[in-house]
Image (cartoon, rainbow, N blue to C red; front, side):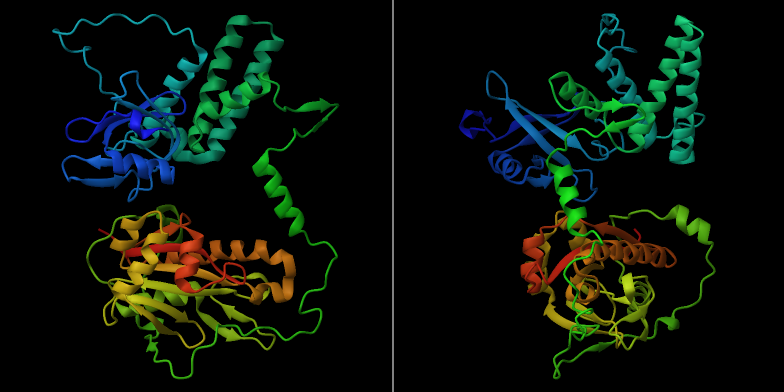
Length: 478
């Protein structure tokens, strides 16, 4: 896009209309030249706040980011149209669109309302219905059948899709045209609910159908089995990954070649001064309803200014990587599962508000249940925070966990298969953090959106033998 074609007003601003891929208008905001350039550079929307007089990145704190698909300017060059893929909701009030349910004219005698012509476009009808479904999803209405489906989860939705499909089949077998239309309407509605459950818009389906219509690949059935369509780029990448990490016979692993295993923890310099953590058992016991804890688990992105206690941090570190027993083969038994008890993770902590220790970057020494200081607060923030997509959330957290792979600890035994196990293990660790934190009113938000190159460089990793895998911000619930 040629920015010189855009006409900024006397304040250096241009209005930007943000539109979802399916055509729905989401919001109106303003851009200056700097925010437009950042939008083009990052691929995510940046705007200029007229009230705060500074740039802001949509979804930086809420996670409801907008991935830019296309930017156009109008015939006068004084208005932008930004087509995006919206994650979550667009409006700060919690509605999918800033224009949801806000119509002029229906109750205003001074505005003449022209009756709309019946919608003839199937895409428009489905998009309108989908908007209502998404609005119910984020703004529940008591007694709503749509909310009933979302409350009972995917199994209930799938059951209804199956029931409506069966009823459509019966109507067709009965040659009842009116009943076919009625049951098909029920089926399409429940399919839209299923799409909303998975945060997919109808546009995804429209695009697939257009691709087939334009000569793209589609399923060709032969008897009861079908041939898969030709794979796209990402599917090919997945296939290559699965093939590369398959458990087929191949080059023997280091363990099979009798090479000694690496140590279960990156060695600590002999002259290092460490922070001994209190025993996690010093925390008061709390009676917890496990089902309630699982049901209430949620990502919390905003935190109070209250500090974590060192005992609380010790407790969370124990629950996520605590060592129960060292094994003779170089493995360890810990509080989380890991393939072959290899436990390839080193936990790094970007600390901002923890009683008793200065802000800064630390490494958790799981074998000794201690912290190794790496960098002070300002130095650590300057190096680490630019690597995160949700920078404000990390800045405002009491601490941010980073789980980093010492890959040889896993590959020594499992070879190429280790690439799967490391990422699976990360899920175990983070889920333990969520559940343990909930018992002490500590909020958690997992972080997968980060710049690998920046974080690896900040931590001195080569990105091959050691690298950042996953993270999570934590803090006292606001």
